[in-house]
Length: 248
Image (tube, rainbow, N blue to C red):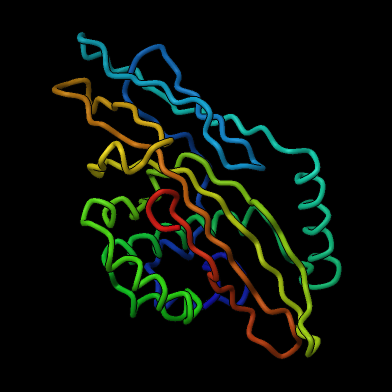
């Protein structure tokens, strides 16, 4: 099955929201006058700064925005732009990385929720068959809290960026494109501190009342692959899934 926003997709097996483009938005959290900056590097996928916060006692109604500051590696930035150009010139003149990114976010959210719910049969047509079997084995060993943390709703995504891009041919002359996407998302799953060393934790106060809710920032890598050989259906398939500290 193709990604929902790309040509040749069949959205009948996916929720209708996957067929619509999403507009980039900041994640808005209630808190006056302060900004939390998440600063992942595009080359290494590392979040360098996340600050704890909670609402003021007065319960003000001003909003908190989580602002993501991306610092690209110049070499990777140039290389990926070159590959986008080659894809448009030689493989698909309608390819657009912005549209692809939005579609991948929807696919990531959908697939992560299926993984969290151990709905492996529903992954067929979205994820490579050999990868589904491996994921089922790994998920069977995860405690319930880790399974819950695999799930990422669209509103919990705070940053998405393309990572590596590859164009290659096999021995039979078939043409392939692979695009690695990196995602940073929030989860309220209760996770042991010692099991997720290196992740960032902060607190979110909902509506300015009561105890703040603890949120953790997690990362995930999903690789999408499509065969561009003449006569082959234009379907993107997920061939790699990694949730840092959860599903490596």
